[in-house]
Image (cartoon, rainbow, N blue to C red; front, side):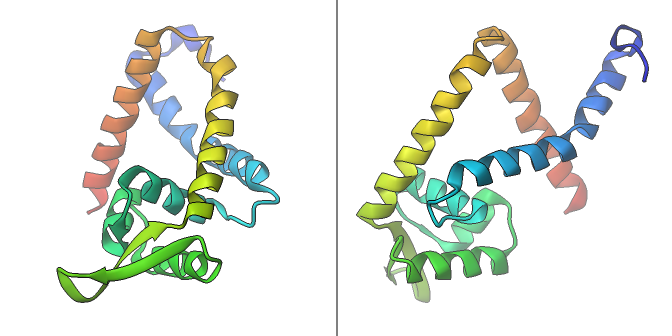
Length: 152
């Protein structure tokens, strides 16, 4: 492999994007390991996170925020409802749509999960300056938007 110092800025960005696939696999494996014993899947964890942040949401809203397939979100929501993690209520804006919200049990669980995850990033984050993390965040947001636009 080429020495990092010999790469142009564009080449470094390209290599960084190429690392996304193994990074995603590693993140998923880590999240799965951290969820062991909770009965919650990685996909369900993501939905619980959205509902914690929003308070309540429709399935299309969750789908749009997570940028996942509608059918996948629907299956995961159904399982969360069956497991007593999500409650539904009628949507006054739409006759057949439902609004979803966390049960108190699910709120407690997802808050605990988020706390553990945040704590695990404390040491890692200390390796970088606030400016470096801000730059990483901006690049990730812009890259995601650019890739999303290119396949629509």
